[in-house]
Image 1 (cartoon, rainbow, N blue to C red):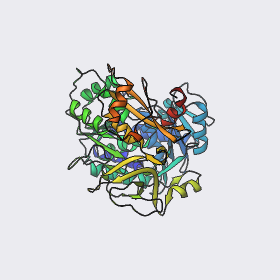
Image 2 (image 1 turned 90 degrees about the horizontal axis):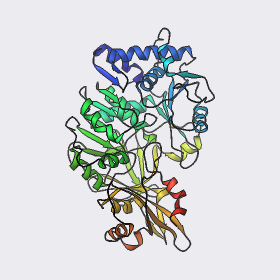
Image 3 (image 1 turned 180 degrees about the vertical axis):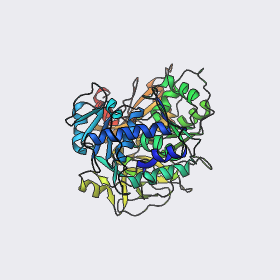
Image 4 (image 1 turned 90 degrees about the vertical axis):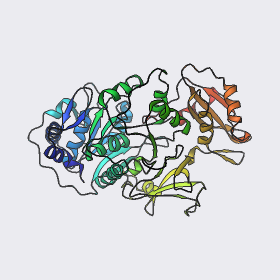
Length: 484
């Protein structure tokens, strides 16, 4: 399907049914269509045509989704920008994407191209007829975080969005009664594709809660009665740190999804036991439109794995020479299927290195178990080589997470003049915890071989995060001198 026509279809089928809300407004399907038509007219008045790129420098709010559908109605593509980026970073994305206009809030800095304010979206003239779209037309430009160089524009087509949302709808059995509570940022594929488009495609509704707040989250759940949400491990860790007397009514939730980074099995079990919410952990990249494996809602869920391949996707684990490795052996995870991106914008050489013979090279190390469940071992670039031995930081982090006082853990490699690299751990503790680093080190020694144990453990009040909520290991590496 083409999402450009989704607001029209929903408005015809169920005009008064709820579709989209945030803290300021609640829209029915008919309301959403009227907003989209007005915004399409406004974008058209600003010169947007088929093939244009519209930049959206907005926080999570209804108008971001309205502008998304409006741009698609005109045959344009959209690049969402993290609104907390500095002007230089945002201007880089706008220029690299070739955006013709940027939609922003009042008072936002100039980004070097014509601007539209959010209020302008309501001022369009007559709504143009929807543009004729091909499945391979560009829909989204999602920019990578840039931890290994300049951010790259991941080109996602309408066919990619169609395949990914169809896969989610089948896997999660989504229907008109489903209600997504959106807490992840809308400048990232997860928030747009799973959090928004999948629910709307299924006939359901979406509630946008703005910036995540630990202390209001469950109040939103009780008030709005969503059926699912998607979050990252850092959010689950924050919710688990709520005072013990916080026992919310979560009975409306069918499931919760965890992605972006592996979540320790102990944290999943702790959260599920306390709040009565089923967490299904998954795995994917912006380059595969959102997700490629997820634990099933029905059947065996295996915490500590990222589940089974989603419908329509092929997932394999290969050695350096490209051959698939046997079950249980570690190799690079590769993915094929209709969700694989069209490529990196303007970077044919990097595209060719990443998509080889139709398989996307993820840069992640993983293994399949005998039942076909994938376990992500680590990023290839995060692997630590200590005196010739390969160490996987995730294994050390998982050992730290088995201690009840640990809220978050991250392990990185520190230079060593003799061994080359040694593992160093950073942890944050649960509220009220007083465990010492010596006791944590002893705890890890009781689980892991001596050569895998961190040479130093540092306790931080909060571990740094990147814009999508992953623990920011490059920042931790840069701070290694404080623990040396």
